[in-house]
Length: 259
Image (cartoon, rainbow, N blue to C red):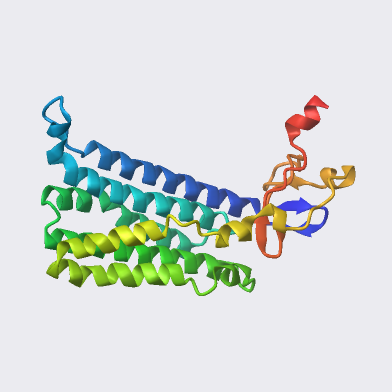
């Protein structure tokens, strides 16, 4: 566990599990984007006019990239709130990554068919299920923090996510009747998430947490002790205050060795 001057702090194995889940997810996001960009058609010529046949592909790619960027940004902040990784959390995360992994397929199909109604509706289905999967992951993380409800209170009623889910769901029947109507909804939801969502940032902001004096006695009591290993001071991380983990690096082993 991590001890900080007698304060209760997040278990190091929980922190490591969250970091591994985040690293795996980050790699997944990078692979999805790479697949999409490699699927873009190459212009058959050296003029700007030669790029016209690729216009639909570029438009679809830009929209999917925007969605993936929004997911990565919010997913990054969400996983920073994790104290202990649970089985439900892992499966919820995999569920979300599964639907996101279909982005390259749906993007390519939709662009090559020039936004035909059924391809756009399929894209809407994937967007809706990916959004629902993210909501499940968020709920799994909130549930793992019980009885602490500070994260749930910080998220509030989450109207932004609810609006996005309803809009993407409504885009499916609309796309079957008018394909560009569905595309307009997709673009609107993507642009909505470009507006910064400060809820998790405020929850994780170290400036909103009480400062702890970096006294010699405090530094000496900061350690990470794994099973069957000596307690070696390596610094203080993830102090828990008001239910929110906040990084407080008081002193590292390298700093002490140089001193």
